[in-house]
Image (tube, rainbow, N blue to C red; front, side):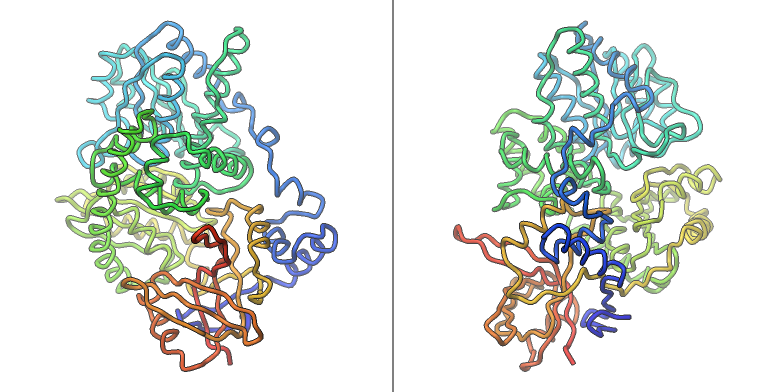
Length: 580
């Protein structure tokens, strides 16, 4: 049954409210904890029982951080790493070109610098070298280094790691492993086939962080001291959110603590990037995922691959400012390229149909640096796993994004094992692949079949899930701050979304090209400001601008807007429906 009777909103969606079971659970939470009812609705959706509400709202890293030695090869990896540090051996860090890879590399580079050691950073070029270690690069690094540490890559790189003759190799990764592992000193990866899977939700930066925790333990056993790891949690938080790792368990505690560290503004790269991105409030998960993450990624997508890792690891304010400006320029360039590819991909996918288990598109000359972002846009538009592939000649490089409950990485991995892909891998929510043109159709058909078996394509593309209804008078800064304690919000923990029923539009103004600023009223003295980003990309902007005095139900996410030192409540409007 639709929520507030909304079967088709202004954006064409049906509204779905909490089930009777969730309502009862929220009521029980409210009675037993004295917490605000809207917060209890959020906790009920997360499955938090009354006796655990307090600990859930104040997660302690010491209670949730796993023992690093619970991961296979961890003790071996940390021991070999410390030997390199003690013996002043030459260390190279081979990192992936995304935020997780850059953050992972920065953790090692910063830790080593604080121990008086330097390391060589190597990040492969996305277009020329592709993802992960390659034989020429590994062979070259092995000639001048004693230890190569592969971060956020390497689990499937048997040949490339074999080419690193004369050097030891450690892999710290989280991508899905095969039945056999590369022949090297250690492969630490919660997604190895012989792991339990209990820590499968960790990103690579957290795996690196856990190795540094183990290294710290070994140092203390030898009566030595390592760097302050808590001060590095801003990097772990950034990677966790930007890599769309689910914000559950220890991930939630890492991000919550990491945001506090970031708020202290001690890392030159993140301070400079925050200023370039015009962040004017305390950092939250939205800032990590949508303001900082895309800029750090821009170097690996359309520019110089190592810019992100260099920014995150530098201790120079001057260098940080220069790198931030360069990344911001590249991000603007990336957006222009993305917009062109997105329009073509969406048109192609719509023609093919957005209701299949897999939504996909492929085109000649589509920049490999933006296919992942465009896949994410197709996923959002269809609520289906999506794959977008750019061809250069007969070879296509693609990227995929999945929806909750559908493991895309495992299916891509199987496709590669079946010979339909040149190569492919990833994790549950994101994957990469290389496919030959003559195999494109059969590969996508088989992938669709595998995803359908996992339930892809069954969710309604037009459903908007809501946590409940609120009147403007109940939406206070204090309430929003209390709800934020149930965060951070992101993958696996969607931000609470509430409906504001039966309101009038007092004021509507177009902002920029596509956005809409609104002032809403309940007619009884209660009011609320709202901002609808991209409203004029669809019918919502025009209808609300020319409202003619009609009343509407509004739906979106509450946030605190800070302006001129004053705080006020704002609704980030996502949808609206005429109130009958």
